[in-house]
Length: 333
Image 1 (cartoon, rainbow, N blue to C red):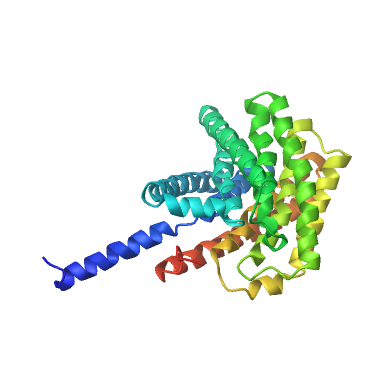
Image 2: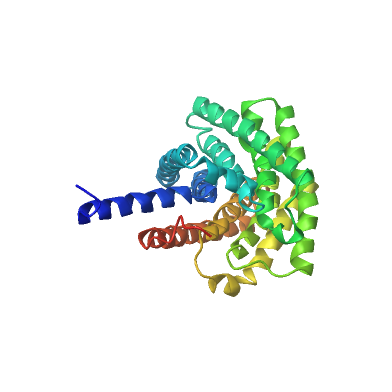
């Protein structure tokens, strides 16, 4: 074969295209794992609280575990083949905040296996906690000593490093010293409030988020929702502060729901997976609320949110599959 051979030309073109796709394989793709793991956790919790079939949660847990391994292998291959592209992502003022989706995925999988495989859960949790603390320190350090950040870069994705710290106690309170869980919870809670002020200032007084980032507004739901779950795990009850966290999340959900038409009009981007995990966190928080207060209102709301969450993730999976088929994923932005 030589360069003039059509088969060689086609093969070379395909290899070049595959290499380019790998180069632009985004770290943000692990948000799919976060959303799907959140759905699995919601169904597992719904089995205990609402009597939903256990096999659904277990099936989702197995599927998301396989998905995580596949995406991890692909991104690991990207690190080996295109380290410069990974460095570009790490220096990017927005994409860098998605690196903790990897450590958060480990923490969510640990929570999913906590009952059925506690040893596996311990290893997943330990790896996730160490990695997340390292990423939190690195990202916070880049904020402190930055040369390229501007207020227009602030967006709800900045909450992702914070949310991971609040997730640590969900399984950590049963796997390690409670003091370690309080350590992570304190980091997440304090810096959530700090970042909330910055992000709201940017949203209120500067230009609107671009369409690609608009779905990240749903991330506003995650810190108070996960914070409520973690806090009830740490204290064992729903007290006044727990109620503040939960009802803050509920208000934000109502605020976002009042703008649902605007979200439905957006074109599909991979960032649309930002709808999934925050909604899963609110669903889980509502199911936890129903176990502590035993009011029919929270039981009905739990049913409704579980159905909505399942529908949203099914729609996101369908749209993602179409985008992959059309070659719309892993392109330069």
